[in-house]
Image: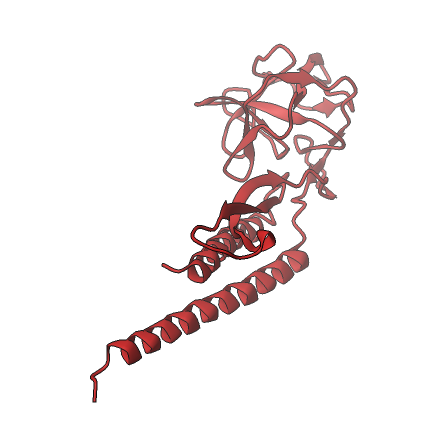
Length: 246
């Protein structure tokens, strides 16, 4: 395969990856606490061989899918009036207990489970500052959540919701649209800001994502047309060289 086609195909692969990420963002634009993904591309340089071109023209620049990161901008808060809907304002994540271990989330839409624990939409139990499940007794009917995470009822204190942040926010692995696995230790947030009766919306901006999608699609189509035209040019050249001699 010639250099021009190889370079263009690397760009096509990058645009395909970008389209997948944008589609994922749009699919999660209604997911509470979702943080939009962004893709970082870079040039991968490799030297040309068997060439006498000037020094500045002796490298090929392929497109490399360098990394994917999360946009940590906060989503807007939607007030629901549900006492177990809890939004986070500022840094931090809730911790929940899953079958795979402790996970972090910004999706604060919680409900009271049959066993008395407070769980997220998947039933994962919300954890307190001691990494234990928060339990609400049947007699606790009026739940209050303070800004610092202290949770209580008309019968007294219940516990305190753990709000933590990873020591390196870039080293988290997304598991679906709501959960994250921290690949580094976490640290409690000293002054968390919780809002009871509200949910943090996704920070995806649909209009911006659609503009990105259209721009990515145009670039993909342009690169595809180039590959097709180059393939046609090469085939025409081969046909002329190998054609019958009159």
